[in-house]
Image (cartoon, rainbow, N blue to C red):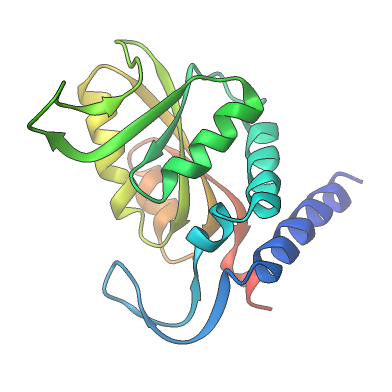
Length: 181
Protein backbone atom coordinates (compact mmCIF):
# COMPACT_ATOMS: atom_id res chain seq x y z
CA UNK A 1 0.00 0.00 0.00
CA UNK A 2 2.71 2.48 1.03
CA UNK A 3 4.79 1.44 -1.99
CA UNK A 4 1.79 2.09 -4.27
CA UNK A 5 1.39 5.60 -2.84
CA UNK A 6 5.11 6.25 -3.36
CA UNK A 7 4.95 4.98 -6.95
CA UNK A 8 1.84 7.09 -7.65
CA UNK A 9 3.58 10.18 -6.26
CA UNK A 10 6.62 9.57 -8.44
CA UNK A 11 4.47 8.88 -11.52
CA UNK A 12 2.62 12.17 -11.08
CA UNK A 13 5.88 14.12 -10.81
CA UNK A 14 7.52 12.30 -13.72
CA UNK A 15 4.50 13.04 -15.93
CA UNK A 16 4.52 16.69 -14.90
CA UNK A 17 8.27 17.05 -15.60
CA UNK A 18 7.96 15.42 -19.01
CA UNK A 19 4.79 17.30 -19.96
CA UNK A 20 6.35 20.71 -19.27
CA UNK A 21 9.44 19.84 -21.34
CA UNK A 22 11.88 19.67 -18.44
CA UNK A 23 13.36 16.31 -19.50
CA UNK A 24 15.57 16.55 -22.57
CA UNK A 25 17.68 13.96 -24.38
CA UNK A 26 20.83 14.71 -26.40
CA UNK A 27 24.40 15.71 -25.58
CA UNK A 28 24.73 18.05 -22.61
CA UNK A 29 27.45 19.43 -20.33
CA UNK A 30 26.34 19.64 -16.71
CA UNK A 31 27.30 22.31 -14.15
CA UNK A 32 29.78 19.79 -12.74
CA UNK A 33 31.49 19.63 -16.15
CA UNK A 34 30.34 16.06 -16.73
CA UNK A 35 28.83 15.04 -20.05
CA UNK A 36 25.35 13.56 -20.11
CA UNK A 37 22.89 12.05 -22.61
CA UNK A 38 19.98 13.68 -20.78
CA UNK A 39 19.29 16.98 -19.05
CA UNK A 40 16.68 17.93 -16.49
CA UNK A 41 15.78 21.59 -16.98
CA UNK A 42 14.10 22.33 -13.67
CA UNK A 43 13.84 26.00 -14.66
CA UNK A 44 11.16 24.82 -17.12
CA UNK A 45 9.39 23.08 -14.26
CA UNK A 46 9.69 25.99 -11.84
CA UNK A 47 8.20 28.41 -14.37
CA UNK A 48 5.25 26.12 -15.15
CA UNK A 49 2.56 26.66 -12.47
CA UNK A 50 1.11 23.13 -12.69
CA UNK A 51 4.50 21.42 -12.37
CA UNK A 52 5.69 23.81 -9.65
CA UNK A 53 2.53 23.04 -7.69
CA UNK A 54 3.20 19.29 -7.90
CA UNK A 55 6.79 19.81 -6.71
CA UNK A 56 5.74 22.13 -3.87
CA UNK A 57 2.98 19.82 -2.63
CA UNK A 58 5.21 16.75 -2.68
CA UNK A 59 8.11 18.50 -0.94
CA UNK A 60 5.80 20.08 1.66
CA UNK A 61 4.31 16.65 2.41
CA UNK A 62 7.80 15.26 3.02
CA UNK A 63 8.73 18.21 5.24
CA UNK A 64 5.80 17.27 7.45
CA UNK A 65 8.08 14.45 8.64
CA UNK A 66 10.98 16.78 9.48
CA UNK A 67 11.48 19.21 12.39
CA UNK A 68 12.35 22.48 10.62
CA UNK A 69 12.10 26.24 11.13
CA UNK A 70 12.92 27.37 7.59
CA UNK A 71 12.78 26.17 3.99
CA UNK A 72 15.96 27.21 2.17
CA UNK A 73 16.64 27.67 -1.50
CA UNK A 74 20.06 28.17 -3.06
CA UNK A 75 20.18 30.94 -5.68
CA UNK A 76 19.18 30.67 -8.40
CA UNK A 77 17.53 27.34 -9.20
CA UNK A 78 16.39 26.51 -5.69
CA UNK A 79 14.73 29.87 -4.99
CA UNK A 80 11.43 29.48 -6.88
CA UNK A 81 11.16 25.90 -5.62
CA UNK A 82 11.76 26.86 -1.99
CA UNK A 83 9.40 29.83 -2.33
CA UNK A 84 6.61 27.55 -3.57
CA UNK A 85 7.31 25.04 -0.79
CA UNK A 86 7.29 27.85 1.79
CA UNK A 87 3.92 29.09 0.51
CA UNK A 88 2.49 25.55 0.50
CA UNK A 89 3.82 24.55 3.93
CA UNK A 90 3.60 27.88 5.75
CA UNK A 91 7.24 27.50 6.81
CA UNK A 92 9.35 30.69 6.51
CA UNK A 93 11.70 31.04 3.53
CA UNK A 94 15.48 31.41 3.55
CA UNK A 95 17.32 32.33 0.36
CA UNK A 96 21.00 31.42 0.28
CA UNK A 97 23.10 33.53 -2.07
CA UNK A 98 26.11 31.93 -3.74
CA UNK A 99 28.26 34.63 -2.13
CA UNK A 100 27.90 37.67 0.11
CA UNK A 101 26.96 40.83 -1.68
CA UNK A 102 29.02 43.95 -1.03
CA UNK A 103 26.22 46.51 -1.28
CA UNK A 104 22.89 47.30 0.39
CA UNK A 105 22.44 45.26 3.55
CA UNK A 106 25.09 42.81 2.33
CA UNK A 107 25.05 39.30 3.64
CA UNK A 108 24.69 35.82 2.28
CA UNK A 109 21.11 35.19 3.38
CA UNK A 110 17.71 36.68 2.68
CA UNK A 111 15.41 35.73 5.54
CA UNK A 112 15.71 35.61 9.30
CA UNK A 113 18.28 32.91 9.92
CA UNK A 114 19.18 32.88 13.59
CA UNK A 115 21.46 30.68 15.65
CA UNK A 116 19.81 27.33 16.20
CA UNK A 117 17.45 27.61 13.19
CA UNK A 118 16.75 24.24 11.58
CA UNK A 119 16.76 24.58 7.80
CA UNK A 120 15.74 22.07 5.15
CA UNK A 121 17.20 22.95 1.76
CA UNK A 122 15.31 22.51 -1.50
CA UNK A 123 17.52 21.76 -4.51
CA UNK A 124 16.53 21.45 -8.15
CA UNK A 125 18.87 18.69 -9.35
CA UNK A 126 21.68 16.93 -7.48
CA UNK A 127 24.59 15.18 -9.16
CA UNK A 128 27.56 15.11 -6.79
CA UNK A 129 26.06 17.44 -4.19
CA UNK A 130 28.77 20.06 -4.69
CA UNK A 131 26.61 23.15 -5.05
CA UNK A 132 24.40 22.43 -2.05
CA UNK A 133 27.39 21.59 0.19
CA UNK A 134 28.51 25.23 0.07
CA UNK A 135 25.07 26.39 1.23
CA UNK A 136 25.10 23.83 4.06
CA UNK A 137 28.50 25.10 5.20
CA UNK A 138 27.33 28.74 5.10
CA UNK A 139 24.19 27.99 7.14
CA UNK A 140 26.15 25.98 9.69
CA UNK A 141 28.79 28.71 9.93
CA UNK A 142 25.98 31.18 10.73
CA UNK A 143 24.78 28.91 13.55
CA UNK A 144 21.97 27.12 11.73
CA UNK A 145 21.41 23.40 11.36
CA UNK A 146 20.88 21.46 8.12
CA UNK A 147 20.06 17.78 8.45
CA UNK A 148 18.22 17.21 5.16
CA UNK A 149 18.06 18.35 1.55
CA UNK A 150 15.06 17.67 -0.66
CA UNK A 151 15.99 17.49 -4.32
CA UNK A 152 13.48 17.38 -7.15
CA UNK A 153 15.72 15.05 -9.19
CA UNK A 154 18.74 13.11 -7.95
CA UNK A 155 20.94 12.08 -10.87
CA UNK A 156 22.19 9.24 -8.62
CA UNK A 157 25.84 10.09 -9.19
CA UNK A 158 27.13 10.42 -5.64
CA UNK A 159 25.19 13.27 -4.00
CA UNK A 160 23.55 10.97 -1.45
CA UNK A 161 26.91 9.62 -0.24
CA UNK A 162 28.59 13.03 -0.40
CA UNK A 163 25.91 14.64 1.77
CA UNK A 164 25.73 11.66 4.13
CA UNK A 165 29.41 12.28 4.91
CA UNK A 166 28.28 15.68 6.27
CA UNK A 167 25.47 14.13 8.29
CA UNK A 168 22.84 15.36 5.81
CA UNK A 169 20.08 13.14 4.44
CA UNK A 170 19.24 13.56 0.74
CA UNK A 171 15.54 13.12 0.03
CA UNK A 172 14.88 12.87 -3.73
CA UNK A 173 11.37 13.39 -5.06
CA UNK A 174 12.47 11.27 -8.01
CA UNK A 175 15.67 9.54 -9.08
CA UNK A 176 17.14 9.75 -12.57
CA UNK A 177 16.70 6.01 -13.04
CA UNK A 178 12.93 6.46 -12.63
CA UNK A 179 12.84 9.56 -14.81
CA UNK A 180 14.68 8.33 -17.89
CA UNK A 181 12.98 4.93 -18.23
